[in-house]
Length: 285
Image (tube, rainbow, N blue to C red):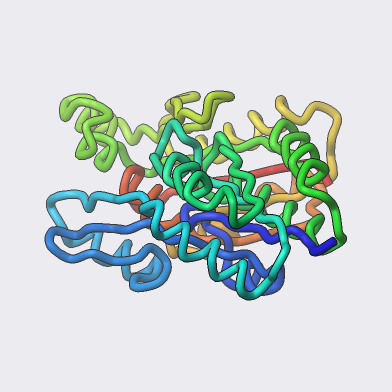
């Protein structure tokens, strides 16, 4: 039986070298700066995005892939891997219509391909790590049902927190009021966010000062993981690898680190939370 082929979307924020190594197909979302449209991760890099973000008054908007975008990828896979089942894993349906577009594409190809669509209930490398896990198992010949069970088990074990550097983008996006954003900025408030079981981003705590916020994130991970000391970790940054490396150095004084991934928080998530974000994803080694 042919191995399962893994598909995801660009919001998984998976480094290019991992996509290539594990032969993952990616459907990009679209980013709109005024009248200009870019394919996320194709026409605009993370650094280019954050450079532009600092220069605009109005936030860019994002657009999910169309069902036709998925159909093109699925048909490409049919040609390149005849008879292979497809497992397509995507950003939380609570955050984007990307998953819904994939479902429509599947319905358009039901008689032509064996396609399974998964709602990751997460964002950024919070589900990127699930995609890579699925791809590794697929390369070992695991069946789709087995891969899905393993991915769900890992999803339940994985812990994640986002540290937002400023409330400005949340205010621009209508998530909080202007007064609250100004108040938070004056007090140097750093919000810590996470994603719940329904795939929705929610505030965990607001801490004064970035150094204290980073220390609090590590405390939260220690509480979540209990007696687990050896971990795998991915740190997402906004085209600022030095900030991620600094966090890893601090984390390594509390945990033994096995697999370590540094990645960019991509344009779609970045358009909502702004520059200076640190997104940390931890799962047992």
